[in-house]
Image (tube, rainbow, N blue to C red; front, top):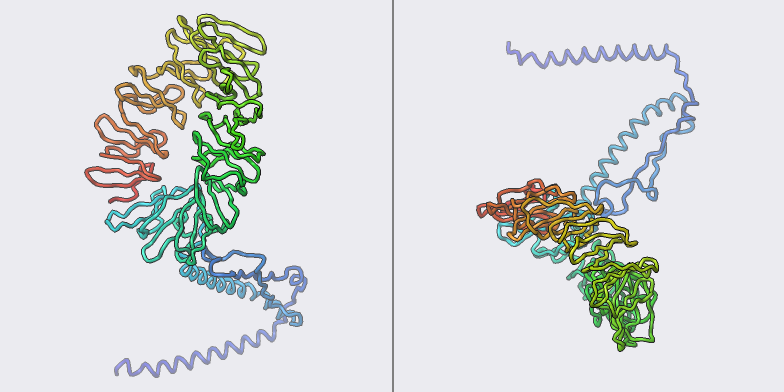
Amino acid sequence: MNPEDSMPNAASETAEQTAAVEKQMGAEQAAAEAATPEPEVDNSILAETPIQPVVVNEPKSLSEVAAGPAQADPTVLKTVESPLVEDTKPAEKLKTKNKTPIFIAIALVVLALVGLGVWALASLLGKDNGGAVADPERTAFFLENQKGDGTFALFDDTGAKLTDFVYSDKYSFNDAGYAIVREDNKGVAILANNGKLSVPYDKYTDITPAGVFYIAVDGSGEKTLIKGSGEKVEDVTDCYTINGLVVAVFDNETTLYTIKGERLGELNKNDNPRDKKASSGVIAINADDHLYIIDTSTGDIKLKLEQKEAYDIYSVNRALTTFSLKNIRTGKYDMTIINGKFVKWDTSNKHLPFTYSDGDFIYYDEYGTGHHWIMGSDGKKIEADHIRGRIVYYDSEHYAYIPHDSKTLHVFVEGKETTVDNVYKVEARDGKYLVVYDSAPPQIYDKNFKFSRKFPKNSYSIYGPDQNGNYLLDKSAIVNEKNEIIELPKDVGYPTITLLDNGDYLIENYKKQMGIIDAEGKEKLEFGKYSEIKFENGAITAKNNDGKFVLFNKDYGIALNDRDTINIKDGYVEATKDDKLEYYTYSGQLIYEG
């Protein structure tokens, strides 16, 4: 017999046997349940541990879930009622209670799946809908596609690629972390430095930068001053930047902001930013009856005064802390700011601007008198007609000078005069006097003329102190705050010494040999081994004696070696080797090869 012919009968017999067994098991189970008493239920447990309601988060819109699964929001909480019913029997309550965790778990899984689905859909639909927020501390930069199609992609300083090569044009990121980008057939948008759009393509027809702000034009030609995040600042009919200011014009009002975005107020009618000229990097401007002195390169407010009058800055010291101001209405130089302090308001005389300022004093000529004066931040004047060169001055109680046709130094300390002979010159810096003699080593004194140190003979050129508090002595030695001489490497000669932002010193001799030492004199980059040492945008490069270029990390370790060229860009390094173009992070990590 064919085994397959017997399979249907065998299956029928098996089914009948199974049914019989199930019937008997059911009868036995029913009998057992009848013989078993109903379990007692502790209702107090139910009363003391009520089932908690299930909280469902309902997103308000797709844009709110575009950044990820929705989070609980107390304003949109929905309560799912407990499945317990008061009039059920105790046994039924117990059974329901035992099943409730399963129901809750199932409900949570379903809700999670629904939430993920909505989030995914919103992410897909809202991909270019804007709303991204930048991190000002984050570094991002654009690289051009080396395939030659003229497109750009965004990378961060770890080398991660944040976008594809899709942008046909771009601006650099501003201080807040936003940049204008363009795509063919899409238009213009604003990109946050995380690679996401903060302002979408279809919102404005044109966007131009204005300090930390942007001027956005819509389809009807209306202009709006916005932040990089897309937040509206104000409607404008005109807007422009000039000398560290953002000037927003609407109707008959003009609002002033710094290029950093700080609002100064409504422009005073007697002041016009287009007519204002910056002097030595600062500008004076009136808004809301205040006079602001602003650093035009950074937008920093150097000084704010309660003043309705309009002024021009005629002269200023290098530290941008001392100003000579000319009253536009009267034509007089009737305001002086010394080291951030208003010290003079004198309309009886017309003074010429100061010719020199240093710290807490100014030196100026009095108009029409031929007299020369020193004025300190305390407002007191010292006649300076008889002074050779300039006075060295701390305050009205501590100053020194050398008269014309004399080598006698006059030192005034708290009203008491001391004279010192055979002095060539005197310098005053950071609470110290350096006194240089014609035929003796120079010496350092404190402002009370207490002796501190004598230096080697004929080393009489002093440069400093620098921001480390050190002096540069004769361009061949460094004197620290303890008046100790920091020795330079051997065979340096008489180099130029430059203090770097990190506190180290760059030394270079007449042969263009270079090296770096720290503030204690320890060599960080061996002198004579490198030339063309450069510090740009936080990156360090140098050319070695073989004519090859090297990239160093911040600890002067070699990050990239033996390159034909290395160029520091904004956020990345462009290097070539054997005519091959490469892009690296400042730490030497390869980003992209051409």
